[in-house]
Amino acid sequence: MTCRNARMVLLTGLALVGATGMAKAEADYHDVVIDSAGEIARNSYGNCIRSQWLTDRDLCPSENLVQRIVRTNELTEEDRTVYFQFNRSTLTPEAKDHLNSLVAVLKSDQRITEARIVGFADRIGSVSYNDRLSQQRAETVRDFLVANGYTNARVTKTNWVGKSEPTTNCSTTETRSVLIRCLHNDRKVEVKLEYSGADRVSDAR
Image (cartoon, rainbow, N blue to C red; front, side, top):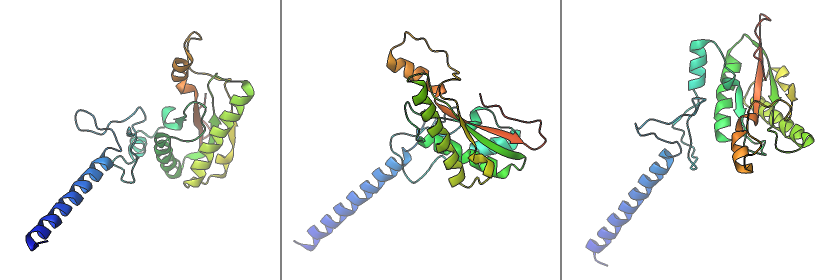
């Protein structure tokens, strides 16, 4: 091989490496959804909407909830709630993002004296099964809060209500797949907070 040919092979190889790096950067970038205006799309929590490609490089840090709470000095019911997939008690990436933000608030707000965990399930399935499932969801959230630094001993108190306290109004004539989607808001865990001063309690329904 001549020196000129060797140089061309080397340049071609470098170009391929560069292209691979660019493709990797694009894949990293698409771990979150970008809207038509070029902004990061967010859900009702204010957390970023992720695509199927999850990467270590997070373009959407979970700071917006904390910043808003600092401004408004209040936690809404949505701020204290995470949702689960059908028949699952594991946390989705979005739920983990949300709970990370909630942990930051719980650790920084000295007025919060207690955080109790309440698990819920939708109406599909037996009473006993949904009792167990809502218990597992509550314990999953409790363990996440503790593992991520919220060490208030009373956070270990969990409660679960199974399917006994629904909040959705879904028709019984729907197909199973449609009903599962409709009942999404019943598959959740709420964090019930108590504040110093005795008068303030965040109700978990």
